[in-house]
Amino acid sequence: MRDRLTAVEQRAKSNTHRLDSLKATAALLATAASIFINLVAAIMEYAMKGG
Image 1: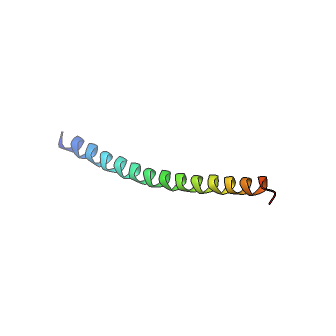
Image 2: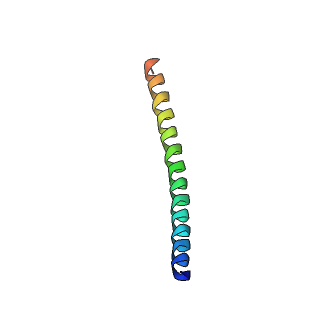
Image 3: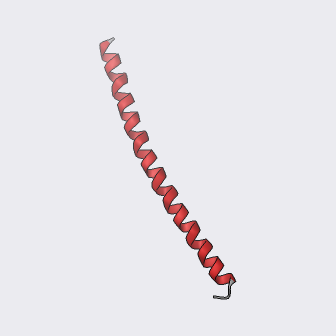
């Protein structure tokens, strides 16, 4: 029983670590997407004004 509990605790720690890493990656991706969208919008606005 103790071995099973230890194994479950280890999996939980591993999963938490993976989710924390995924959260950081998602935040970075969201920031990059936001920058890209703002850049495209600025370029389109410039082009519409006759650049």
